[in-house]
Image (cartoon, rainbow, N blue to C red; front, side):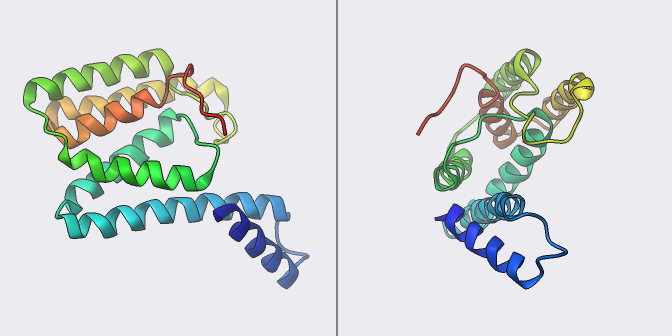
Length: 174
């Protein structure tokens, strides 16, 4: 549904201004990413407002997006699957109770997974040259290490979940 809508919108935009617009494929991809992201944010925040977890869900959204931008991770093959899975994750995270001991353990586990796997699967998603990948690993580690000071259960679960998505042996086929 998102892919078809993106394609129709890309064709429409191309027909309005064929000389000064990118190719339909480039616009379709960009629109698909934008719509996917907007749907996840809107649905997660809208539902969390009714559940009383708005602040925690917003925290998880910002934290995961920040870490994911520099660490990469698995991508689901269908946009609608991504929206459903991501929204479910963001709605679930605030309900996972984490004491200080578990916060530290989840932070350590996330750091180890980042050391092993980050960055992961960003070759087609980013324009960052490969020579900077070690820097992305360090930035990813620093982001997670902030939570050793903050000690937020929401951040610990979010960072751990994102670090699991770095594992290259995971693959999802349609």
